[in-house]
Length: 325
Image (cartoon, rainbow, N blue to C red; front, side):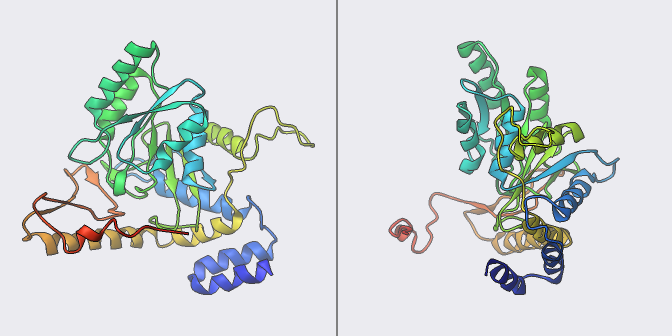
């Protein structure tokens, strides 16, 4: 019955997604590996490696079960463990910080600057010096977040990280397709986190990916994501691993979604422009836009600031209802 239920869901998908998923069933690749996983990773690599007006990059991508899994494995690869500290943006979803605690480490939260609403580079450097002074050691990693799709001040963050020799894990879960100076977010740091949750720019129903510097790093992440199984003809495990690889079925959805990703990004930018046009003469409401030409947000979510004296009809009831069940 499981096969029938899954195939029934295909009626709600586009032709491309259906073709890739049907192919997986026809070839009996209903597992967390297979042609769709490999194909999806190659599609993502082509996308993230493209730079506007300059030579392409050579990053590698690992498809995983969730963006949270990508954060977790990146932290492990950066050597984060019990007693360590990781600098993470305070204005973010919990998935940026929860994996730090999985490893027995401590998140140190950095507030945002007003232009991008993301990690403030000045506060970042202050925090690095503060932690060195108080603990005698540097934080193990830095996690800036592309909140609502808006790029962070990556040039300044990378300069500071380089000076202190601290690896950067970019949380671009909401920023798939956002660019800074023509380069896709998630490709500046040591690792870059992508998400394909149901509400993201493209979806695999659930899923994520980790952008890696090179093929060697990719192989290490894949090893951790497949229970850290050693290369023997029998099951042997000499380290703790995780069951984090993406399903071949989900990857089939992702391959179909990659054929329309540019259309999705263009649509979000169109909606952003509509809001800007509609709100331009409304006093007290300011749309959050690209701070300067270097920024190219995907506008995953259109956001605005509202002056304190502006009241929205019904706002007094906003917190009277709670989610139950």
